[in-house]
Length: 475
Image (tube, rainbow, N blue to C red; front, side):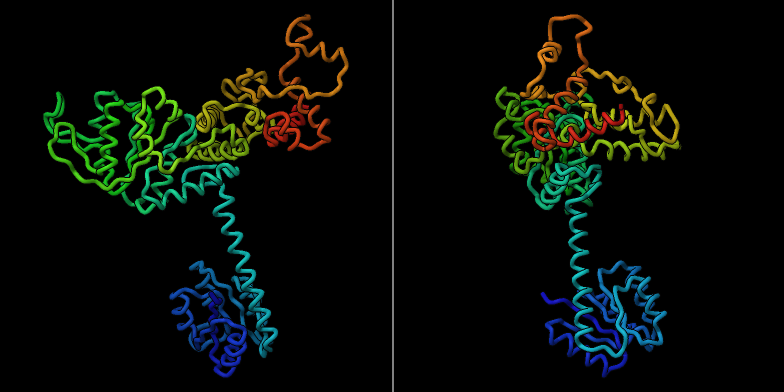
């Protein structure tokens, strides 16, 4: 589609010349003679570039520039001026004009200036698209810019536009409910309700009533009719967290609900139609649950239409400090504390920790620090257990079983010293030292290639870069 250009010029002969110049190059061009016509045309949309005369009969061209800036219109502006008004041209550039032309202007100069402005606009839009879709640091409640999370964000974008059921998997603390809410907020159902039910937190004999509701007298304590989560979510989204904990007998009723989109309250004799998008989540392996007979296979395939797996914090270690800084700023503002950042040795400690509780554990650690302390920087003395020691257990430090000294020639004494058994207590070496030696030897064998060394060690290149940075801090 050709670019749409608007000429704002009250001198008709000049405007006619510009029209012929640009139309001959394949541009789609319209012309207005005053500022009011320009604002009306801009309000109608589909304008890519404006050729703007600064001297108009009803208003100044700078006023139109201010209008474009205030409305944040994605429009390039080239100012048309005379030699006598160069100061105004400079002022226009400050207000966002991309270039200016001095009257009179020949065809080559006009076309080149317009083409350059439109090319910059295209590049700006490409950069903006990249930032919005491939370099997002925050997204619908998530924090993190790692590649694995960029992929998750794009899947959420796609899933939000569908009506299909979504099945979210991931370890505890990875943000499964945040993911469900993100899908809801990005969907056409965002104005409807988002109702969440934690299937593991409700007693087994009450969960059917919680999901489907009940009528008065259905059981002891049912003193009035009560809508369940499925009916409350009508027009919106129903999120069933920890779906693997749902009683096997109730699963058949859930399957029936998914098939006919009708709710029958406990004790009721008639069904109610509902319009609900279902999202569920579990921290268990659903296929293993099916094999163990705890989850219906037919229900799984009914729900498992759009799967989303949320990575553990260990899999997105580039995000650890970004998430930590986010929560530090948030909780410092809430508590009126002065914290602004982490000391380098704290960052190294965070990067070397396993975070078995994932984002939720990191969040709780930061809140603990902010509530109990106050300073500009977070230092090591403020860290709660188990981060308060420089000798973390093997389960807390990233030391994959595949990390071992590479096959290089080593002196016999060094080989004997590294044996895991035998010898004196003095011969026992720290895990951190063994790990550092393994990484350094791998880098030597691989001639300094971090990606290749990471491949043979069975760890990520980011882990090696992080470890090297922590050694410099400790050294």
